[in-house]
Image (cartoon, one colour):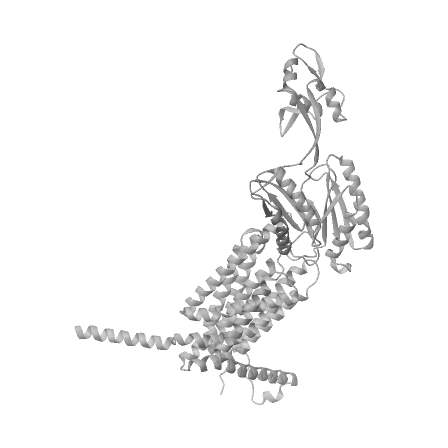
Length: 624
């Protein structure tokens, strides 16, 4: 005769109470470290870990209070109700019974040959290693955010009007996208970062209103803009992390002790990368050939004429652009006072030769009497990376080329070219890729260590913690296979999914191990206890996996702007958990059978402790 609703609810809560507490502590131990990720990824997921941990705690409180109360109020099933059940429900029950019977037979076979099961699991986990190493790596997947930014630069020394005219040409090309409905707005502005620089912003139409993706449109735009003479236009696709310089493809820098040597090597590397089809629009990040006019003064001739060389540069500055000599402080503002020449403006560099200077004798001589003008090319700016002179290189990536692959290939091409002391340094997204990978690796190791400690404290046994955590390698292997089959890259979102998978895998193991311990305390043998616990816990483990998979399906089936990030996370959770649950149902029982024999049930340990204490008390009484 079965228990009544109230009694069943009470007994059920007592049976799962420890498992719920252990699961809550384990999941919180996995989620909270995510909030302490370093760098820009940490800023994105700082609230994520805390929200998940708090949600799990609230869910556990509901599980131990509200759910039993509602279950206690369910009416008891009347006799004969089974006959009145619908066909669909009976079919579902029959299917569940058949699957449970199949699982019991396969489990019995695995428990009868545990070393074979362990070997197969180890082979499966090991097979995932080369697959993992071959996964494309990037900070974020290429997302369709409906926004294209175009950085435009014209030759150094041109006027702002010339740059603006080039922007009008680019707008004329891009206007075809607004007229076709693929783009919603288009605007540009010149003078961004200098008279020869500009910027174009193209806001695409809503994802549902266009047939092509952002990547396809950008590839077409890049091809059209590359054919424009006298202008360099570089499309940028912003990412969701807001990384400075992100969306520009591969950005690297050559750094070394001598700027001229580094600049020459950078030009050579640009030529080599341009020949590789995996890179497109390879260019130097800064113009190294800005026109420059050098005024070379003959100090001996100037001394003979009695002309003071010290103030000559200030005089030239006053003639050219004016020189600030003081500041006038007024209420609420500061007005600079500039000394400018009132003579004929300098319209040509050779006009400097006709600037007249006063000699010590009062005569007036042209500047050409003591100076010569030389035209040369010089870098627009001298940049440093890691305190060394550096020259940056930027390149777009072909379809199917991940950032890590591009960085490795650029390093391979550059290696034979670089002398001692010159280094290739990743910048922007390429630098964030290494930083994020190291940060997530640290969080992953910390999460596993904390989970082991929490489980050891909960079960009062390190062996129990090890048994539960042994399912993690195979679970991660299943996630790696799911990523490879779905074509998902290893990025910050999929790595977060791997960390979450650790907690979910541990949760399934806790349900089986904790109940097996209860059955051993009731007197069942080790093999019978783990077999019975696995069969009885099959339904909650399967229900947990099915509900999680169904909850993650919208992530995979999603579409629209930024869907790529959700798809990456969804495939790890859905594909990884779906395959990993099967692994848990077999690996955990086998590991328990092999390792739990070195532990004793709690009741036996308590009885042993009682006997030892009783003997100790008898010994004390005997001496008394």
